[in-house]
Image (cartoon, rainbow over all chains, first blue to last red; front, side, top):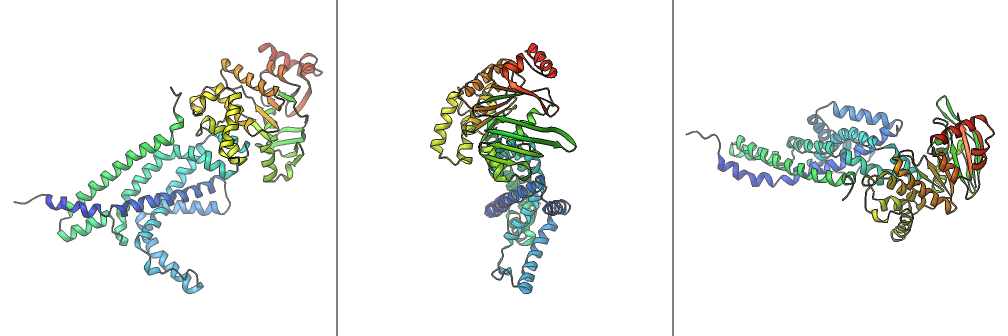
Length: 240
Length: 246
């Protein structure tokens, strides 16, 4: 009798796949943090209309939005070592860097940060611009520096506005990390592929890995709801 | 004490302040009155450079700032020697009442947290809000928010308080509590500039009244002079009409 699924194999593939969860989560969370930095910087460049940098940052955003993530991953993976090597040979820079010892996880992290940063840039810009002008004025009027104003007053309020959007993008990023195996990072998807070819049971391992992604995303969604509540706690009405 | 010399302000080609000169002595309460669009709020906001004057000089105590060469440090000095109360309160929405009052002390004046808290509590006591310390602005009535706004402005102990239509966004029944708070502050001898439409209040509280229209000062004088014996026909017209409406 022909079996649709080798249930035994499917179940047994879980531990190995889950053991790679730190890689998937690490790349997603790491690139979220780095991309927030990139996003805030590019958003501020746009808001304050910084000459030259403004043009560079809009080319960056346009390029990232206009090219596939897969291509960007390859560009980073093949491009950065070449650039480093070139700088070492031609100019003697970066001598301490050993191109061959850079882990593929690093390239994955960079590529995803650069990608997500471009998307966050617009979200963060519009969130900052949605903060009431009066908040900026009140901060200036008491003598806060622009940095204090941003960190203490504007960013916390902008974050509350941006969280639903940021959350969606973060979840998209978690799922997009499934691409990293193509540059040799063994994440949960990579592990599933390895197991699948080993046992010639691809359907089973892909079912297993899809369940892992699904549960991960559900957990993240729950967390995001909590974070949003906390970030917006000051918007609640009259306290009893 | 405060001197505004020949303040001009253009928005593009629109000339909204056309050479304003005002002198205010220490402890004086000066009201700026005038119809909408006369430039009175803009003038107030030029004092702390929330609006940068196109030209002119702002002088507070011994600090003299020429708009044409104002540095960041000059602007910072004007802002820390003034406290502003806004029409829309503009409390920091993400901070509690206590944090709103404390933040200038801890972050701008770099005073230790304990001491800043003590000072803030004393000021909040004066405006009668010690029972709302951990509330967020969204949890307060407009009148309460504006009293916090006044406390926040007072916290830095500025040389002069600037009130930009402090009661214009309030429900009528909440106006009195805010006016009472402003009156109490005036009684402590603070130098104050008030832009307001509350003419009766201006008449009662002001040492001096400035009447503006179309970016110029039409007339200024003591409250008594201005309300009872205005020299200019336009002043008379405006003050009498508005008084009837009150």
